[in-house]
Structure formats: C-alpha cells, structure tokens
Image 1 (spheres, rainbow, N blue to C red):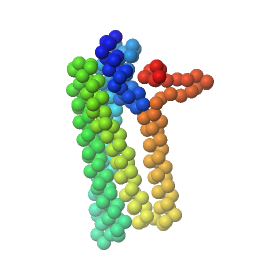
Image 2 (tube, rainbow, N blue to C red; image 1 turned 45 degrees about the horizontal axis):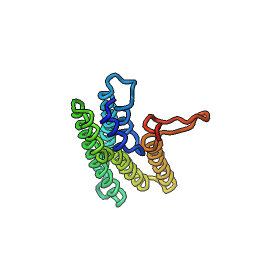
Image 3 (cartoon, rainbow, N blue to C red; image 1 turned 135 degrees about the horizontal axis):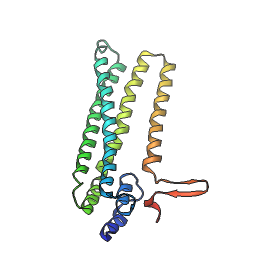
Image 4 (cartoon, rainbow, N blue to C red; image 1 turned 60 degrees about the horizontal axis):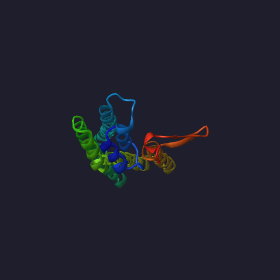
Length: 204
C-alpha cells in the first residue's frame, strides 16, 4: 500500500461526509477492485451524470411550462405572473445546475491519467464546488413546485390548493430526508443486533 496515499486519506479526508469522500477512502483501502483508480473515478462521474440528467429533465418541463403559460398571461392576475416568473427563474437555475455538474464531470474525467495523490488532492480541494450540484437539485425542485402551487391557487378552490401545497411540501421534505439519510449522513446502522459500517468508519 502506498504510505503517502494512506497518510493523505487519514489526515485530509473528512469522514463526517460521505459519497465522494467514501470513494476517496476506498481508492486506498479497497482490495476488491483490480483497477481501483478507474472504478473510483467512474463512480464519482456517474454521480454527476445522474445530477446532469435530473437538471436537464427538470429544465425541459420548465421550458414547456414557460411556453404554455405565455399564452395565458394577457390580462392575467398577479398569481399567474408570479408563477411565470418563478418558472422562468427555475429554468435558469436548471441551466446553471446542469452546467456546473457537467463541468464537474469533465474535470473529474481529466484526473483519470493523473497521479493518484494529485487526483485525491484535487477532489478534496474542489469538493465544495462539487456539492453545489446537490444544492441546485433541491433549489430547482422547489422552484418547480412553487409555480405549480401558484397556478393551483389561481385555478382551483382554496381547499384543493392547500392540499396541493401540503403534498408539495411533503415531496420536498421526503427528497431532502432521503438525501441526508442515504448520501450525507454516516452510513452506520444496526441490523439484527449487529452494527454495520462503511469501510471509512471502521477505525473510528
């Protein structure tokens, strides 16, 4: 095992955050992969590919919504105008989100032929920028749900509108909870009185 790599992982990788850092730790300590470095980069790249697909899909729905709402804006109420405004803002944020995760994916692909120590250091350095893609995912989702709710208050009775608002909040909260439990928190759990940990936490 490369002692320099082991020292860097133990001293520089924050074990309180998972996902990218888990892959960084596994690059040094995993023994299952024949080509660990390529598997390591491919796993991180696939994360950003998924975020990119989500941003593009959401942006497509927002673009269609912008076109459809434009036809009903004449003599419209303040709620319709606000709905169109937030739908447009959401579309712009989808473009920003898609652009940032696409660039992040390209950057990580450029590390494939670098020295492993440089790759780990570069990913450590730019991790805050990488996590911006996750943040944009939830901002885009909220920006998409907001105009839907405004349209509901404009076109439906108050009772149905409140129900839609409650369900929208539930959808967003469930998405955030899933992200925190499965991707952000330490993956340590107890099953049948046995404690299971990811490799990165076994020595803690």
